[in-house]
Image 1 (cartoon, rainbow, N blue to C red):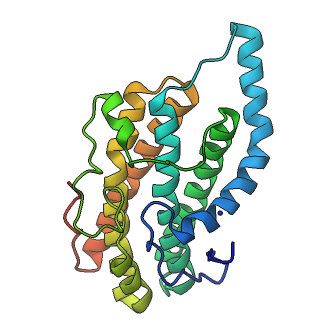
Image 2 (image 1 turned 90 degrees about the vertical axis):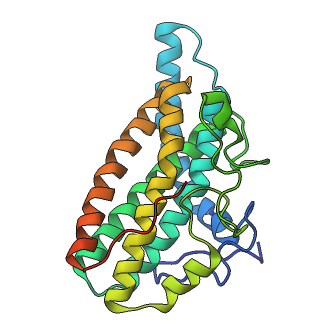
Length: 241
């Protein structure tokens, strides 16, 4: 997921400017290649399920703006989480932090594959073409992407800025572990409103199901990461607005 793209490799290399372009960051497009490979694997299974539903219950549902917007924007949100987790998995010396980072990286990569598979089946773009989270108003939720932090490289709540990602890459030892936990807690918190909106207003059963599972899993991860910060005499960053 072009000569301008930089990928996150198994060695944990992060792009020099991961969020230089808020709408189409280089790391996002590179990681989409990974998501696309995963999506190709999952496409057959997903398509089979949709065909089975069509045969048993008549025509399949049509995705609404919430289904499409959630899949596109959550792809962007997740891929930054994968970027951070991949770096820390390869650079932390703490086994518990490395395991957490691996779990987040693998879980969110798989979810990106699913969402990209759906978008392909629906003949929709892989990434949003307009304002992030504009679909939130269709779900009866505030569009928190408007007026989010003053750094324009943070397109959605909870996402790390270019400066924050650079700082993460500069740290080591306990400082790296603590800052990763702080950024990831805030990252999870920032994605919560999108998950709740999808749970409320998505038309497709698979989107409702994934959003609910994401919310349950990330709530548990926030609790676990907060406890890990406490053990390290640190506290979470302020929650995103």
